[in-house]
Image (cartoon, rainbow, N blue to C red; front, side):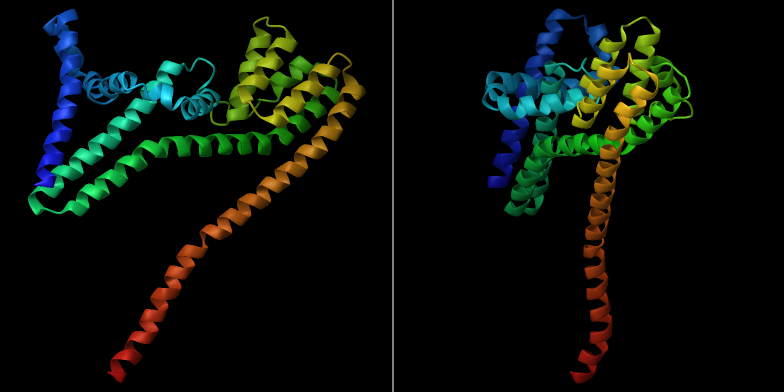
Length: 294
């Protein structure tokens, strides 16, 4: 009885949210245009998952209630996707997470109906919470991974920059040539560095391009690098190289620290498979002896 009530209630609530949006769109669009949009599949996904739950979250003032975690989530998405990422897109991402969690809960409710197993309802609730919370956690991990990637590669770029400037290149030319032979779109530092080089090539002042590089990277080490760069780039030559050399030592030490941390994390991840293998070996060795004793 509880399973049927839960399944019907969840489905009815979903149909109510999505049905209201369909009627609203039918009042403002021709049926042919709506059918053409639905044929792509994107319209249906946005209608059933994003728009339905975004409107419900707005009515319940959930975005205002969870303003702090939503703001933190938005800032992380801005770091990952660029300054053009808007708050509305963050709300759409949050609504999509909520919709997927609701869909998981509804599916588990219908699965529990023929077998009459309330435990499936509990599992559905757990899955729903995990699907809602998971993107927030994963976004933080992605930001941290991006930060580590930038810090790991920044000493190499700094060393190459010092060599080029010491060989007689101007700072602007050296910044552009540092990208030669690099995967410009795969690495976050290369991508932001390329944007800065293209901005200077298109006429943007050097200090403005470097400041934008700093804001896009949003990493403390890059902020220190850009500050030293802006204070010393007019001097050029040996003075510029000497100013960056001390910073280079610090960055190499941080790279070593990150490498050690990653090594420790990799070794700790091997503990659980090794324990599982040990248990299997214990069963394989102990089972024959146990069978002989019995």
